[in-house]
Amino acid sequence: MNTFAQMAVIAMAGSALGLAANALSPHPAVLRQAVLSAAEAGGGACAMPASETPAVSAPAPWRPARIGVEEAKGLCIACLAGFVDARGAHEYAHGHIANAVHLPPAGHPDELSAIAQLRTYPLVIVYDGEYSCAVADDVAGRLRRAGLTDVRVLQGAWPAWVASKGPSEAGICGVCGLEAVPR
Amino acid sequence: MKLVAAAARLLLGGLFLWASATKVPDMGAFAESVANYRIVPAGLVSVTAAMVVGVEILASVALIANVWSRGAALILAGLLAVFTVGLASALARGIDLACGCFGGNDPATWWTVLRDLVLLALALGVAASSRPAPSRPIAGTPDPSSIP
Image 1 (tube, each protein chain N blue to C red):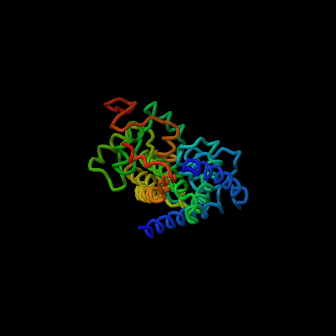
Image 2: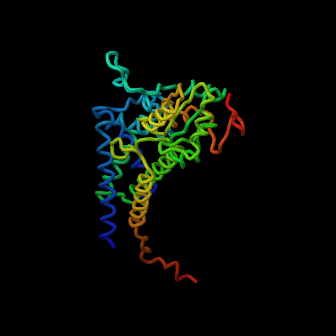
Image 3: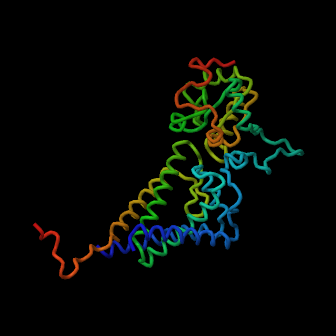
C-alpha cells in the first residue's frame, strides 16, 4: 500500500477510534455542542472567582472590579476610558488595545506622565494576557494607590479583546488620533 | 543506523501514545484546549478533538508495531505542524492558553513551540527512514539505466 493510502486509512480509522474513545471517556466532549474558548465564553479567563466575592462580615482587601469586553469596547471607541496594558514590552509592541498605555508591573520610566494622562479619564481599564489577571490586578492596585479612583480590570484579558475584534494596534495611537487627547 | 531509526520510531510512537492516553479520561477538557486555540469553528471543536486523539492513538500504535510507519510518521508530522502553527499563532497574538498537549493544563510558551518543532523534525526523520526500498527490476526486463 502506498504512503498516501496508509495515511488515509490511519486518518479515517483513527477518527472512528477517537469518536469511540470519546463515547467511552468518563468525561466525554459533547459532540453536538459548540465549545467556545475561555475568552469567548467570558468567565474562563480573568473572572472574579466566586470564593473571592467580598465578605459581609469582614472588610475585604480592595480588589479591582471587572469590566466586560463589550462595555470596554464601547468606552474605547468613544475614548471615554484610559487603557493600561500590563503585559510585557514584546507583547505590547506586537499588538495592544488602541491608545493603551504600557505600564508593566516593574514600572515605567515615564510613569508619572502616563498616570497624569490616565487621570483625565473618568475610568481606567487595566488588562494583561493571563488567565488569572494577577498582573492586571497588581498594576490596578498601583494605579489606585497613585490616586486614580475608578480602576477596573478587563474580564477575559487580551484574549477576550482579540476574540471580540476590539480596536487594537501595534503602534502608539489608534482610534483617538495621533495626539491621543483624552476627553 | 537502523538501531537509531528504530529508537526514533519507538520514541515518537511512545510519546504520542502517552500523550493521547492522557487525554482520553477527560476528552471534554481537551476539547476546551482545542477551542482556546481558536482555529477550529466552535461547532466542530468536540468532533475535531475526539478525532485528533484517535488518530494519535492509531498512528502511535502503528509506529510502535512498525506497520505503515511512513504513513503514521507523516500523519503525526502533519498534526505536529498544525499544533506548532496554532501555538505560535496564539502566542504571537498574545493569547494566553494551555497547551493541552499531555492532558494537563500547562501554559503554552515558546519553549512548547520549540519542543513541537523538535518532535516535527523527529517525525519527518522517522518518515524518511521508513521510506520503502526501491523495487527491484523484474527478472528478464532490461535495466533502464543500461538503455542508451
